[in-house]
Length: 243
Ligand code: MN
Image: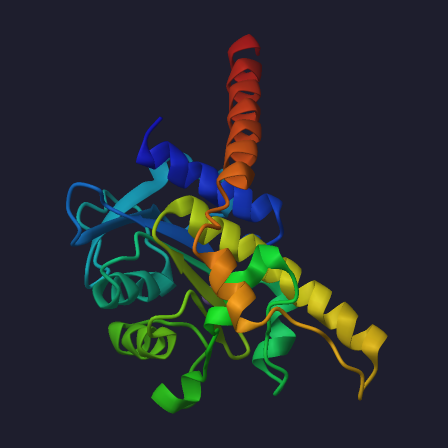
């Protein structure tokens, strides 16, 4: 068990839950040096292995690229680690059910307990406030810093017309929050349809949110997903060995 193995597992868990597809990424702060972080080279998440993990400094520059191409949007990660010393894992995704909430004035709200953290606030980053006419990607440190400022102390932020960033003190929390953010968006949309335009939806209140987020670490979710991915990886390598 290592932080690198857990990072590979995080890529696969996020892909298996439809949070990231061929794009999107997850990173982890280096346990030995808080001024460094690790994430995969530019590669579809389900193909990531430990050999694809690259180390970056706080400017999101690769420390030892060895010919590998980093992802364009690595600046999201460096700027969030710089702004948030307590954050040790960052997910960036194009979570499909979340998108409608970042381009309408309907805010995401916590509709069920597994996504209580939404009640802590999920601001929406408007890239045009930082730079007009972009291709929507966070391609430099100035855009990354702007996004980190909008995120502030919150557990996640939406990115208008693009996706979201989700953070946590560790990988299980950042990955769990990402999966349940997507589920909450889907469920909230369904509730809006059932309730109709003027219908009432009962969301979690602030006291319920506070009581839940104090302990919700997604440990059981992570343990299950981790075990499944490790089985798959074992089967893949056993298959290779016999052919
Ligand atoms: Mn993106």
